[in-house]
Length: 188
Ligand code: IMP
Ligand code: MG
Image 1 (spheres, rainbow, N blue to C red):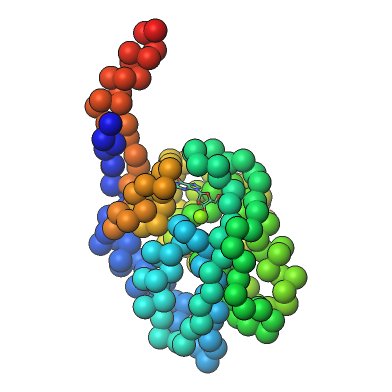
Image 2 (cartoon, rainbow, N blue to C red):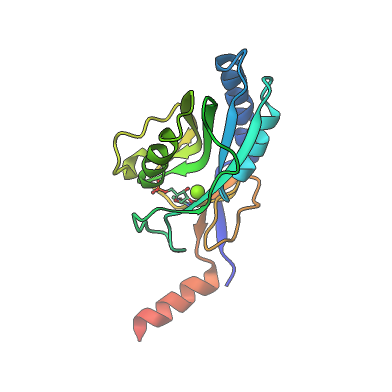
């Protein structure tokens, strides 16, 4: 039943990278007030840690979209589950995401948000899996880590809503009991 998690990016590595990104983003937004649009739920852990490292004032809003039905493959369908509370007009929007995989979610989202006439829009993602990209046009302005094509959990990312609270990023490997169950299943 219990899954094993193989650490891909340690807690120390994530913390260090978030600090670096915080410095870079603070410098880039000097004299401005970025409006951080966090994509729920996965982007929350990263967004909070990042916001704490910014030295410029920020405002926050949240949006929830769905593209995955719960498994590990993309349906390609994106719908707004929770919209922003405030208008974006004239704001310097910084979208904060957990991961860019196919790019479907962000390319769709960008289209919707551009229509609300922000002064600027940039994208900051904790993780990027470029090998999986279907939408080539998604421009990533800030990225924590480029990772290989593996399904990851932790630091906001889930597998069937589990593991979001891990302080590191890891790959789920089926536990011993699951592996045995799979073998039994295959013998049937
Ligand atoms: P995209 O639309 O294919 O780019 O998918 C983006 C969304 O899929 C992310 O915001 C995640 O919620 C989810 N996702 C993609 N890859 C992973 C993964 O490796 N682990 C957990 N969630 C993932
Ligand atoms: Mg997400």
